[in-house]
Length: 197
Image 1 (cartoon, one colour):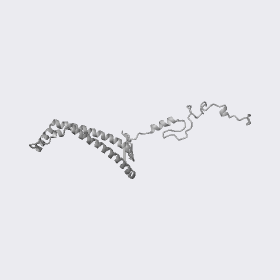
Image 2 (cartoon, helix red, strand yellow; image 1 turned 60 degrees about the vertical axis):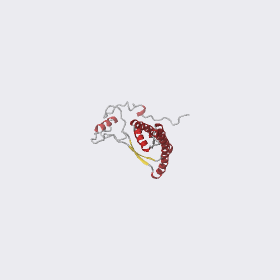
Image 3 (cartoon, one colour; image 1 turned 45 degrees about the horizontal axis):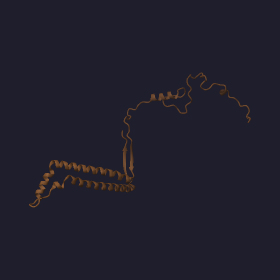
Image 4 (cartoon, helix red, strand yellow; image 1 turned 90 degrees about the vertical axis):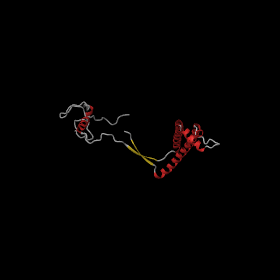
């Protein structure tokens, strides 16, 4: 292909002259690094022209004065959230585990209480009084010590703990269903959470 545009004019300023960084400073300008013109006015305390951006920022920082009534403690952020729905499956799992822990604590507490009362002689004293009150010439009366023996007390407490586990799990799951129904009408429980400092 041939170039049909013909000879193009050459600009002397760009073709033969020095680059902007290599030019000699003019008569009224001070020698120094080249700073392009600023599109926006410099901040307070800085001047346009020969000063660069770093000098204008330094002058602006020097002109700032700290406020005497400024807050020094960090502000605690708070968020207001709403519990819109409780998952019945997760509620059932958590309530089941918590009720099992409560049942074990009940059995252990009953065993410790029985041992303390037996060491203090409560069953012997009370059992003797009851056997004298209910006894006759033919029979010796009601034997409280054999009725309230440790194995029987632990079996009775274990049955109560199992019933407690079943009832607590069922009631917590039913409560989650009722909460979801009521949250659909009134919007649920609102919580305000704050960030720990």
